Length: 358
Image (cartoon, rainbow, N blue to C red; front, side, top):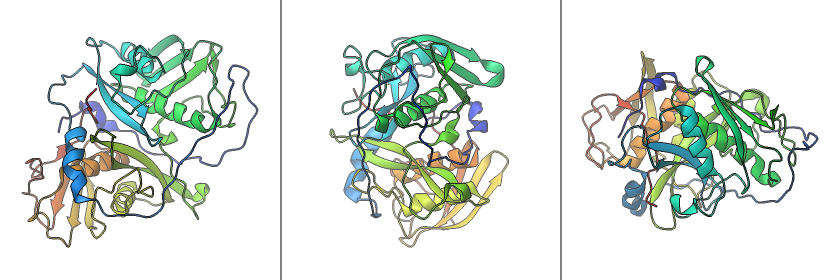
């Protein structure tokens, strides 16, 4: 598992997600509409036959050197945004240059389509042009001004576009906030859906939002969970999903409880943890989340899936705003996972996620 730089000691912390928004007037800089959506229901335990295929895709590429990979959020065949770590033609020297390359990959373009993993597509419409990208290092902010007029986007796709831009740009070193504009004018709302757009955007926006019944946004908080999915080619990858839960003091514990509960959409996503696993203890110490888990299957005497451990680290580092995790399983921290990695020391969040072949 590759590690991020120390900037992840200050990971983005989730804020309240505003899922129910009023319909606002359209902006003259935009146009077009179209509809598409998908949903799931119950929770299934992780299928054993998916593990090997999943690991082949989700494991970070050993040939990727620091500075040569850029993480871009693309749409998979199920309509989910997923981070894909793509190799740049040359090493990028600054966030602005990386942002420009990332947005180019995120824009529908026949000439660049073969640079994306099979089954994944760009979220920005063809014809999208960037007028300027600027960075304010002191404020950890990157600003993207798109050329007007901006191509039309389907109402059902508008939120995905904003999510993909925010999550892609905040993957860049030192970037925590994003500002978006068209023709020099800040984007205030989306034209077809009426979705309000904050002047300054963060990962508190959420990603791949689940529709939860009986949860009032006013009394809720969002947690992001990493579940497994598989491409048509059999390669596995992680998908981040934001779920609304009742507001509570410990966001990390809430996230882990939901990770154990599994995904709602069991047709497209796979659980990464056994449903009978329980949290015995979860505490923060300095820059580390320490978690004690209990599993009735006898792990770690039985093999601990690498996919479970990686999803656990991704979920907890995001939720706890800390860079690393220490795991004890059934009172033992000397276990190996299915990829022969040890967990007797804290594990840092991976630098690159989902390095699929292309």
